[in-house]
Length: 85
Image 1 (cartoon, one colour):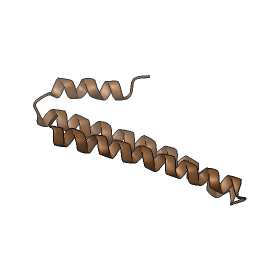
Image 2 (tube, helix red, strand yellow):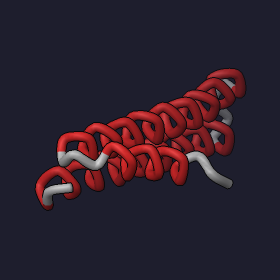
Image 3 (cartoon, helix red, strand yellow):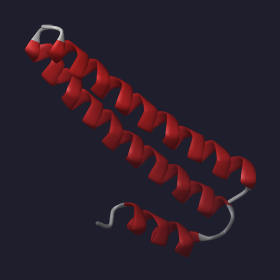
Image 4 (spheres, one colour):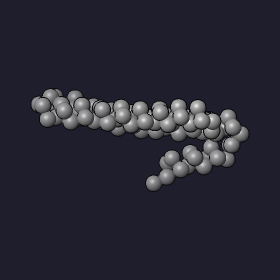
């Protein structure tokens, strides 16, 4: 991948991680300050959903970036690596 594309994809991934962490912190804050427990639970679940969808988004971005460079096989291998345990 080109440096620009790689950098942008990495930035998106980092920002999605930061968003997940911020939502988790807010859910914890609601729990510890006596906020609505149902809201805190929904927020924590939403944080996980955002993390998971962000990972999927970044995986597809890597896939298309690799395809744009004529590396279809590499794109498939990267996709598999993203979802391996």
